[in-house]
Image (cartoon, rainbow, N blue to C red; front, side):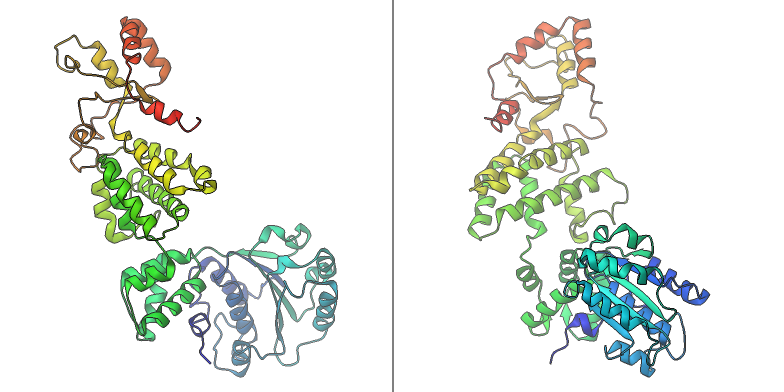
Length: 466
């Protein structure tokens, strides 16, 4: 029978237990100092090593060369625990053994000394599934376990464990494993299994696992079965059903440059390919979040999930866009999250969203409009004769003159010629702007401009509530 990679490459020592150094170091020090707490709680998401750590700890305590900070995995006791045939290592499922009768049987078992090992180790997986009466029956045993018994309770939902139990146990919280660590582990497995796979495919698998090493090994197993020894990037994309990052990059570039025809065509292609547009929307929100991190934070390497190979291209796309403008894009998309979740036609909502966002590059800070109002006619910075100014489009911003195309602004084309981050004026509050207009006697001119009969981004946004 085939042995799954998750079982074949299960950690057998604390050193092999990746991503949890705070747990392994504490347990090893406790063993060395002979101060290991008799009742432990291991909590954390699925597939990050909770039961593996419990099994390694049981071997370290009972190893014939120990107690030791690392089990030898060669003595008979270590092998019995590894192969799950030790009578003194009890691992039970809390979901299917959650009644008071099972707990009473367990209490009777732990009263007696181990048959062979130095200590009896009881591991209760998914312990939060125990019933209230079962918790009450277990309470005294957990508080004062027999001298020769250790209790280890593993759970994915720590908050469901009663406070009376938590107060009698030592709690270890297992962390989500970084995708870089998962990728390195998968690379080592691929070498041992003599599987050819690209770094990009490993990156996709590690990213999709979302911190679970067991899930990553399962996906790699599936990819190997599909590809017959040589895993191709497209095989992984097909298995995961993910949307390639290049699609997001191309769509975002079209938004920044107001290529509305290309936007519609790209959404049509996604729909024709059978892509779940609701899933696409959720992934695009994550992509916008990553753009904001990339733009706003210095050294953001460990804070985003973008493909490192695409970072130079993405930086070029957003080079002429300020971080506050990226926040406007994210806010516009977030406002439609509930709508697109419940609509019968997500394609129309997506088209509306991206067309709406394609108008955002034409917005300018209100300070630039005030500067134009202050400038005498014909002087540098004054509006050209006959030009039409759009009315206010978003909070603190005005639309550019209609006779100036949006793409001339330089946003998204990599030039940043019109409004670079360095030259962009500092935004003022609404109250400051009004006071400045009153002082300069320009308020009447502003009112006249606002009354121009022009299509406005503000009017477009009004359609959300219509």
